[in-house]
Amino acid sequence: MKTLSKSLALVALAALAAAGCILTSGQFVATYDLPDATFSTGGTFQGELVDLTTIGEYNDHKDDIARVEDLSLVGDIRNNGNASAQAEVWIVPGATSAPTGVVPGAVKLWGPITVPANSTVNVDWNESASLFVGRQTLIDEIKGDGVFGLYLAAPSVTYDISTSNAALIIVFSAKK
Ligand SMILES: [Ca+2]
Image (cartoon, rainbow, N blue to C red; front, side, top):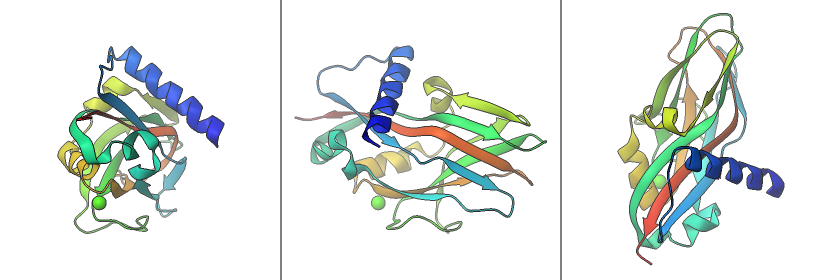
């Protein structure tokens, strides 16, 4: 597991470098690895409780965050179906356990992204940035308790989606 986290962190840094994002003094990167997920029409609902305090870079500075500089959700989204499908990510600010179904009051965080039939879309740093629609809700959580729920949704009528190598990457500056 440690090896996996390390390799994903390297992927995150490579993504940052590719996006021309250079860290300056006082800036930190927190990478939260998301589990692989599959969700399909009538299938399993995919919810995750994110606890950013489990990440050292975040936990060390969580009381001193000056600004959230950048956010990204990267990863591979696979459409296993024979028709084009859309995927979204929703955030549940007050969650204390992994969402097990659609939550009233949840905020759409990201998407939708369209994935062609039987294809995989690799969402990189730049593409991800343009897909955030609930950025402020996430920023408030990062500056708040750092604990929130995320779940996948699909506005398509039928869908069969898998995600892999997914991570939430946060670039923030700290006061000390
Ligand atoms: Ca919270």
